[in-house]
Amino acid sequence: MAGMPLVETSELTKRYPGVTALDALSVRLEPGIIGLVGANGAGKSTLIKILLGLLQPTSGSATVLGFDALRQGAQLRQFVGYMPEHDCLPTDMTATDFVGHMAQINGLPHAAARERTAETLRHVGLFEERYREMRGYSTGMKQRVKLAQALVHDPRLMLLDEPTNGLDPAGRDEMLDLVRRTGTEFGIAIIMSSHLLGEIERVCDHLMVIESGRLVQSAAVATFTERTQVLAVEVESRAEDLVAQLVQAGIEATCEGRTALVRVEDDRPYDLIRDAVVELGVGLVRMERRRQSLEDLFRDPRTKEADRAAV
Amino acid sequence: MQRSEPAAGSIYDLGYRRYEGPRLGRRHAFAALYWHSLRSAFGMGRRASSKVIPIGLAVLTLIPAVIQLGIAAIAANVVEVYTAWNYYGFIQVTLSLFCAAVAPELVGRDQRTHTLSLYFSRSLLRSDYALAKLAAFTTAFLLLTVGPQTVLFVGNAFAGNDTMEYIRDNWRDIPRVLVTATAISSLFASLGLAIAAQTPRRAYSTGAIVFAFSVMWVVGQVVVQATDETYGRFALLLSPLHVIRGTVLWVFDVSPERGSTLALADFDLAVYGLACAAAIGVGVLVLLRRYERISA
Image (cartoon, rainbow over all chains, first blue to last red; front, side, top):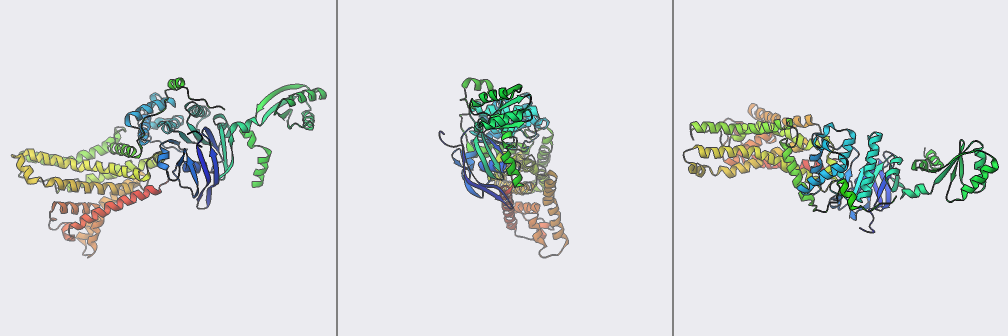
């Protein structure tokens, strides 16, 4: 496995009559927890289905775990777990029966399937409820069963399509925590799609952004956020003047009300801020390091302009 | 964010271990789906109310055999109301109802609940799914056809004065029953699933199956009995129950009763055998094609 990419696609294209869902998408992903971000209709589900070998691309190639997704779909899928976005549970079966059945369809012998089912359901946090018919389950419990059926055969890769769909904030937190734990503690590679950057940031260590079927960005989450450490300097007045002085000294800074947002790459800005504050004679209220969130990045003026241009 | 190597202790605490055992692949998946589907054909693994109809109908198929055994107990080998060759005629309505009730359960449900995408995201191929369902449904029908025939044969053999003599005189019925039961089971299963797989809506597929068996039977009767159309008799070949009747008579080498629809149509009985094989083939093809294209 060492050195082998998790996923490698080359010029992957999928066209439907009148719509291009994926447009010459080439990407190489290393094992880890990968966030797949894009607006609705950006091509996330199409990409996931191609990576599962469920959908044939119009052109291009995709290799997953070293298998050719186009030709070796059946072998590949033994080692992949898939959690679809939509409802997919038969309501008149118990979670135990259903997940056990799915484990057998994955090729696990009967006894092993039962054992793994019990373990997996416990892992996702379903206890006594697992002997009840799923018709009475809450959305959160259903999502857990969906996750369990993707995990029961101990896959090497899990593809999770919008795992927090329909969950309330508490359920969302629990699901994200579960995904993160599954990825980090058990070393299972995960590709998780979402349209919420905040979720990706909390869980993933790699981010892949697609838009209208094209790859916009693929990089470690850390490189997005570390690069952009921001220091928020709140002053009693004259924030504009402070910003002007810092900019003059060659430091990137913007003004937001009574707060100056200063980009810090090393220790130099701290001294400059201190000197500037003393020189201007303004009261310094607070200084705080702000880790810029991914959402801020995508609200970057440049993207905004690009958006406007697109409209 | 660093990814830590899984530590054995913490994994044990959470109850999660890596699976190092065998992965048996497609054949095992096929067998698992077959067994699961056969059980669910009789409502096993589901709430009690799902068992009532399929098991009730299965019991109904046994009733003629039990009645015959009652008669045999009183007047051994004298009155034969229900025999191997005419048995299917008495249970054809029950079999049609079983088909209409169970086929939507077997294939419509996974479409209704969108569970298909979970099957197809595993090592099963789409054709494996369709064929496992078909094999399971065919087996269910074999239980409903071979089962009562066995009761009838064994019961008759022991009811008479001389068991060995009964077997000597009637052993030819055994292969004939097996052949006809297989043909009938395959026909019901393939047509039933081919129809039911077209829609997730239960009511529609049940209605369509009832139509295919009963309404086509009535049409066949009326066209042949009540009109003088030269080509009208071909309508019988579109009625699955007439095809079954003709095939059974052909295999058991019995002539149709004088004045019956089959006698009026006056086909060589082998034609029904061919029609039966053709209908099974069409059913299987339609089923496979449906699963090739269905989105999941």
